[in-house]
Image: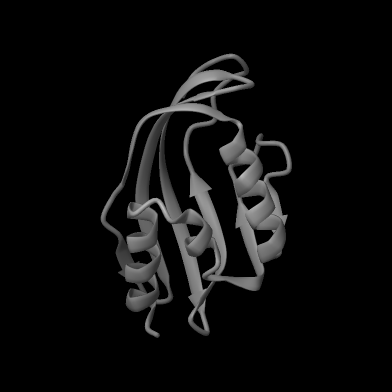
Length: 125
């Protein structure tokens, strides 16, 4: 698959809320990197990335809204704007706008980096 085809499939799954399937598109040795200041901001390996996602999702008490935007491809990377408004069990309601950048090699996502403003403790995004 081309990077565009990987991006089309990945973003389509995310728009349908099929995040478990989307994470299945990660390479076995993929790396996921959150913003500095986030605990355990680098996660290595598809299995660990999926576990981190599941823990994050289980911490959501209520979803108030969100969006997966249109992606843009450049070489072997694609970027997707995403937003969400959710109440978390451990930190209350937060609005998050982020740019998600993905690197593709051999038809799989090998690296994901997320860019957003990190709130101060106790503050919503």
